[in-house]
Image (tube, rainbow, N blue to C red; front, side, top):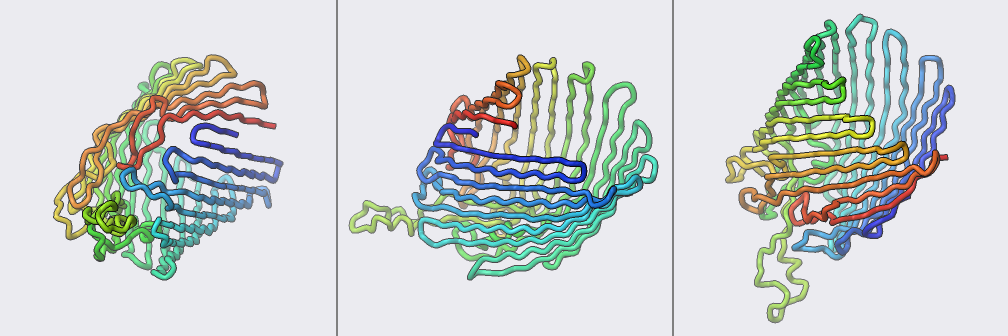
Length: 477
């Protein structure tokens, strides 16, 4: 159980049982919070289960179930708050499967059915409803009877029904097959590769592939790895559900979504030092994407300020009808994302562990927002040029655990209505966590989110929470 700032309350219960031929896991989590702004509350319920039963010495049946229901109030942007808007979402998944394991090969087959419902109620009182039903069958066979070589074959079939009551109904199918190989040539060299073919009902059929090599430099604990891959990804059901076919003025315009196609390259180094206490990794990457799928949502735009409330003989609600809310899912043509990543994991001693991660990113797209845009090239929004992540975990004794983590995003931009992107603020957020074990059954928890009370927003005009303190307890029996 946990409680803290902004009337935050969370309770969860988990039960597990294991026998020689049977396993069962049940859990339920419930969360409520009001957050800081008016009309920003959240209620969430999430029960889940998993069951495994051995039917024969090498054959196991499995059943997975997940359910999540959320009621979220929508405060709107800071400059255009929405005192009544809210969404209700429901998502459940049921997936039975079979797994066969032997010395020569493994087989895993499963079916899943997922349902997602979203009702979006704005302060205009007009609900926006989306329904997504997904059925999927997956089969994978791993062949293990060749020395130093693992071969995998697989197939899938996926069916999606996207329904927006009184607006549209779309049905899409996807059938595919894939082959993968992992070959350990010797103690120093490993090769990996894969090939995949997809048949789509609504898009062109396509091939995708990947090649990867890893070389372990003798007597150095250093490995060199490289990867090249081609990917093809049609719009998902949710992408289509949020494709409003509107331009930046909220006028109707055909912005039908096309599949993403990408070619990516990666090369890196990884090494362990100081008797494996320290591990560092450095990676250079480049990803060239055609038709990158993006979602844009601007704060409300007042198209006629002269009609604002307070003007003579003006309806006090008139301003609501002057605003437009430009938003759409669209393709950003010919996007390029490239940069470098560096990370260090250092176990100074059994009590103290430090982690550092840094990413430098350049992310730009040509013919941004839509085909008739006048913009030739612009940075992709909310991709920071510099991303820094640092954490420290300290355990002074067997009963006490302390942790600090920080994330900083530097040099990023936001969307700007009918114009090029605009710089938005950098931020540095520090979090603290702790756990004290009273005995083998009971632990006390405390954490502080945004310890320095940083004033920032992940998305412009939608401020994040300030300093928030939480206390809780965990019991095992």
